[in-house]
Structure formats: structure tokens, C-alpha cells
Amino acid sequence: MKLLSTALLASVALCNELKLQLRNIETDMTVPWGFYNVDNVNLDASTLEPLSEERKDQGPYCVDALYNGKLIPCFSFLDVESPLHYNLVIDVHDQELKKLSLIHNPEVSGIEPRVRTPIEGPEPPAVKLKKTTKTYQDKKADKEATTAQFSSEDNEEENKTWFQKNWKVLLIGLVMYNVVAAMNKQEEVHQESEETQKPLID
Figure 1 (cartoon, rainbow, N blue to C red):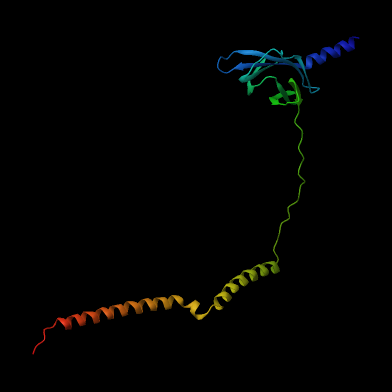
Figure 2 (tube, rainbow, N blue to C red; figure 1 turned 90 degrees about the vertical axis):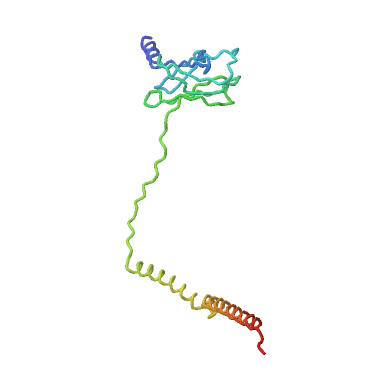
């Protein structure tokens, strides 16, 4: 009997008290919002004092927590909706409280506490990186590929017709011809006008 009572006392001693309270942002007034028992060793949580159903706290609130007499201010900021459907997620690592969060869950009535511990993620397989060394044949193949690229550009240049290769020269010649022809025509017009203006001498 003594052993059983000692075990019960030890389990109670290992449990930690967690009280939630809503704090109005504008008035800074707080109201109790549930009382929970958290067992960090067995990773279990239970509700000691549930929320009263008559409470109709609605609107934006900060949710504070008192954990073993220590205040955790505004761990969650939420717009409270009635009826309540929240999971109180208590993240524990090395038997210490690390994080509190309220998660909306329509399948839950009220606030249901849940203890969560971090799990190890999968480790990627270690792949040994191989050092790539190029052989003489690889270097020669790379050089031939670049040479082939330049030679293909040269072949494209050779496949052009004479007109495609020399169109710029032809265009310059045509422009110069038109300029010279226009200048000659102006001189002819000028000479004709001078001849018509000369007085006739009998």
C-alpha cells in the first residue's frame, strides 16, 4: 500500500500545472480559460478545470499561460469564436516545455490538450562524390566539338551567294550614284537658267 501511495505522489509531483487565460487587448483584463495538468515524463495532458459553457468570449484576444507559476505572455493571438474547437498543443523536449500553440480543430469540443515531442527526420543517404578527371581523349573530344562549331559557322558563311555577301557594298554604290546624278542634274539646270538669262546681242 505504501508503494502505491508513493508512486501516486511521485506521479503527481512530476505533473505540471498549466493555466490559460484570455487577455483583452484594449482593456488588459484577464479571464481564466482552463486549467490543465501536463506530465512531461509520460507525455500526457489532462483537463483539470474545463471552460464553462456559459462563457461567450468573442473577439480578438491574447492567450497567456501560467506554467508552474511562470507567465508565458500572449503565446497565441486569436479571434475567439464560440463554440470553441481547439487543440492545445504542448511541445515538450527533454521533459521541458518548449512551445504552446492553439490549433483550430472542428472535430474537438472545447479545448483539448495534447503533448507533442519532436521526432527525428529521415537522414539522407550519404553519397560519395567522385572526382572526375578528364583523360586526353575527353579533352580532345571537347576541343573537336568546339572546332566543329566554329567550322559550321564558316560553312554557313561560304554557302551564301555573292549578292548576300556584298549587298552592303552595292547599297553604298547605289547611294553614291544617286547623289552624283542629282548634283549633275542641278548643275545642268543652273547652266540652262544662266543661258536663258543672257541678253541676245545682235
